[in-house]
Image 1: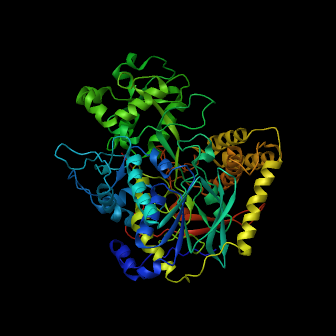
Image 2: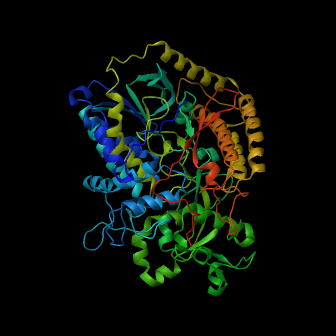
Image 3: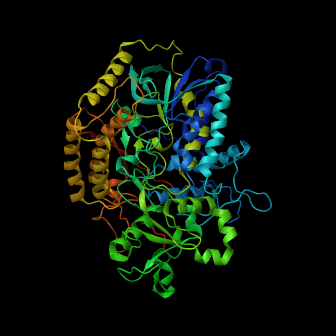
Length: 637
C-alpha cells in the first residue's frame, strides 16, 4: 500500500484553486459514456449523486432505507458551520480553518481543512437556493448561533431540525435527477462487497433487502458515502441501521483504514435508562448556548435540583474554562462530565448524569424565546423522559456519537483503491481527533457538492469508457464469497441471539476503548474481542433464510464486521500512546487533566492495511505537515 496524499503545492490559501486549474476534464458529451455508483443517500451521497448527474454522468444510487429521506443525516439537529460573518463578529475563512484544526487537536491535514472552510459559504448559498428553511433574524437575514470550540457565531440552523431540512434539499436535487433519468435509484439495497478488477474499483455486490436476491452492479467509479461506525459500541446516537459493513468489507479489499480509534463522545445525550435500549437519543449541542451545565458541590447529593441553592452548585465548565464556558469542544465537555460523575457528584437515579439547566435563560429571555429556539428538542426530551425541561433541568450524559476515523482518502477523496472515492463520515479526512459541532453537515455537503464533482473528473478522464460487464470472473468470485458468508451465518444455528453478541461487544468497547483508555484496558479488549468473535461464529443463531426479507441475517453480517473492526480500533488506540481529542489515554494527560499530545512520535495519520484473516494488519503512516499553524497545547481557558 502506497500513501500519496496528493496535496497541491503552493500557499495554503491557493492550493484548492490551483488544483482545480490542473484537474483533467471530461467532455460534456463524453460524460454520458461513464457510470458512477454512489452508495449511500445521506447528505454526502445524495449531493454527490445529484451533482454528478447534473454534470452529465450516469449515476446509480443505492439506498439502504426505503427512501433516501430516511438517511441518518436527518438526525443532525443543531446546525451547519460557515464563515459568512453575518453577525459581524470578525469571523472569516481562516478562523473557521483554525478552529477546526485546533478542535481536532492538530491531527488533520491542513490542506483539507482549509478547503472545507473555503467552500463552506457556498454550501449555505446552495441550501438557501434549494429552499432550506434556515432560521432568520427579524429583518430577514439568516440567523447564526454559537457552537462549541468557537468564539464567534457561525452556525446556521433550522431550530433543532437542521439535518432534516438540509437532507430534504439534497433529496429534492437527487429526485430531480431521478426524474430526468440521469440517476437510477435502488432502494432497500445493502452493499456487501466491492469488486476490484485490474487494481481498480469496478463494481459492487448488494443484497436486495426485500427479496434477499444478491445483485451485481458495475461502474467506471464507485463513491462510498455510508456514514460512520459508532454502532460498534452498541449504544450510540446512531440509528440502529447505521453500520460499517460497506466500509469494512471495502477495507478488506485493499482500502486503507485510517485512525479507527478516533471516536467522538457527545456530551449532551439523554442518559441510559436500562438494558432494553438499542440506541441513545442526542440532545443538540446548540442547547449549550443557553443551558448551563452543573452538578452539586457535594458528593452523593440526592436533593432535587430546585432544592440545591445557587452557592452549592458547581458550574464546572464555566469554572474551569472561563473563555468558552459551556461551549468548550465536545471531547472536553464529555471528559469533564464523566469526571464529575466519577467523583460521586452525578445526578439522577444512576448518578451517571449532569444537569443542563435553562432556568436562567428563561428568566432572561422568556419562555417563548427559548421555545422558539429549541422547542422541538424540549418536546422530544419530555416525550422520552416524562420531565418538562421548562420546569426542571435536563439530565445529560456523554455517549458515542461520531467517528472521525474512516477509510483513508487523498486530497481528491480517492481511497488507496483507484476509482474508489469516499465522502462524508465514511472517510477520515477533515476532523482529526475530534469533530467540532456543526461540522459534519458541512463536510458531507462540501464533499458531495463542491469537491467530488471536480476531482472525480481527474480519474475518469484517464479511464476507458468501455462497456460495463458484470459476468466477469471477478464479479462471480466476489458474489460467491458473499453468498457463502451468508450461508455460513445461517448454518451455525447456535443458542445465542445476534443482539446478545452486539451488546457484549458494545460493553467491551465502552469499558475498555471508550472515553478513557489505558494500556491495560486496551490489551484486555484485544483478548476479549477475539474470544467473543470465536463464540459468535460457533453459537450465534440466525433464523430464516437468505431468499427473503431477513433482518436477522442483515444484523448478523453487520455484527460480524463490527467484531473485526472493534479489534482494529483497540489495536490503533493501543499503538497511539498519546492523548489527542477524543482519544484519551489516561497515561498521557497534563497536570490539569487535559489531553497531552506527543507530536514528536504521533503526528501522523495511522493507516491500517488488511493482510488477511488471522493475520495482524500492517500500519502505514501519513506524516502530518503543519506549515501554517503552530502546534500548541490545546487550551479553552
